[in-house]
Image 1: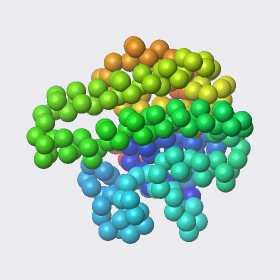
Image 2: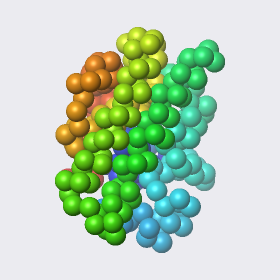
Image 3: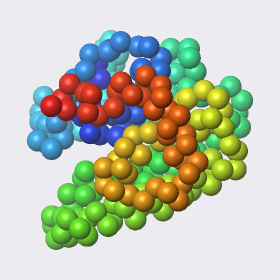
Length: 210
């Protein structure tokens, strides 16, 4: 397998964690978003969305981080990244979607660039935008984790929701977001970071981070 990704992309980090949790080897293919390599013809020819991450498995390509993670879970079932019971699976997906659909799209690189140019926000205004949506969005995740406490987001094994949570916290810390109002979120984050799958794949340890 090959994973096209960018070290600072939280969506890419999600998939790196999932691959590590399953112990699956892959070739790391960097796509530098700051240099706009995602819109270069060489990459656009294989990625219809022109986004990262993109997984190549044999002759097939899968894009969108949550779709890739579920694809990996279906093609390599052990260890599972989703609970076996329908309610547990729904809860895991809900936490993942609260981050991937409610927080991340408002703060990805394309949006931040648009806020600056052409809308003309300065750096501080852009960062206030970022912090507002992360801090309020994580409150919804906090309420979910508080309602059904567990070692990880859902249960005693890390899974899909944790793959999505951890990269979002890394981004929140990079932008100096307030996190003391989400103690359960941070408790789960700290539990995850004790595991090699999360620690070894963190952004600054990627080949293209230099």
